[in-house]
Each structure stands twice: as C-alpha cells, then as structure tokens.
Length: 242
Image (cartoon, rainbow, N blue to C red; front, side, top):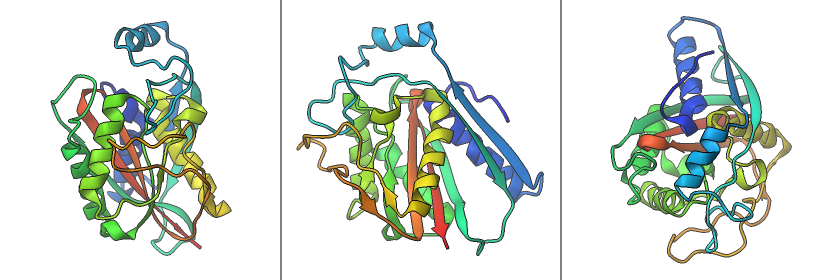
C-alpha cells in the first residue's frame, strides 16, 4: 500500500499499476491496494470555489450536466501473481500519462486522453477493436466530459459501449481507482454491466452517447479510465475469462 500525491482522482489507479509492476518484476507475489476517501471540508470548498459542484445530481455525458457530487468510500484490492490462462478477472495492462494544459483538467481536445488509452492498449498487446466496453471517468463536469468524449473518438474508429459509475457513487476522488475497478470486476461474472447512471439526454456536442440500459457481456477485454487534476490520465485494461 502506498500514498500517491498530486493526481488525486487517479491515485489508486496509479497504485494498481505500481502494484502490478511489483508483481510482474518479481518483487512480490501479492500486493494490497487500499483506497479511502472521507469527508474533507477543504476539498469540498475547493470544488465549490471552482464551480464544479452539481446543483442537484450528477449527469455524466448528459446535455444538462452541471458538475459533480463528492462521495465517500473505501475499497481494498488484492492483486496476486497468476498464469495468463487462469479464469476470472485479470489485469491485462495499463498506462499513465500527464499533460500541462490545466491545473484541473486534461486537454479538452482529447489528445492526451487518447494517447493514454492507446498506450494502455499497446502495453496490453491488444487492438482497439478488442475492447468490449469502457468504464468512463465521467465526472459530469463540462470540460472533463468534453475531453473524455473527444479522446474516445480519437482512440476508436467505433467507440465501444461506455458508462460512468459516479452518479451512483459520487466522485470518490482518491478511492475511485480501486472502488470502480472492483465494481466492474464484480459485474463481469454476472454477465452484465450497468447503464450509465444519471444520464437521460444526449449532448450533440460530445459526439458519443453512454449506455442507457444494461449491457449483456461475456469474456473479453474492458477498458477503465481515470483522469485527475494536473492532467494526469490513467487507463487500465482488465480481461475476464472463464
């Protein structure tokens, strides 16, 4: 377990990548990653000062989106050394990058977001067409959703089905990397992924539309995105096999 500073919203996604690297290089056969986010008045005041808080509910990728709702939670993930043909949910690979467009967001043209997804695909040895679905970061802030939508359009000829969990959980900031990965990993063996919570009205300006109903899924590769302050971007690719 380690504490990652700076890129708050990608902290535990980056911790997962570091834990996987420790296992891959033989440092350890197991690694525990813990993500914890509790109420913090300074954080709340900061998001309020940046006018990033929703008036009511979070609506990721929705035309009427107006900001986020902060959440709390704790997630604990144990990664273990395994064989490539073992059944279950496996971390195939991932990548992290950073740009300097803004102190609070990545470039809205989607270039660095597309680059981290492409890097994650390359490191995982798969093509964009191999991705069955995407767990989007989806903060419901105007700039973040624009950048993520643009990045997906750049990275994929045909954007796979995608969804955001944050309207159901709140934005759990430093814990979201672990919590959202665990939730997707738990959903895959059930054979379905959830509709994008909070979404009701497409935004023509985004050029993409999230899932509005449950998606039946099976074995294959799934992409999980996490984007944080300072333009830090992280993408994980997990593989579900039976």
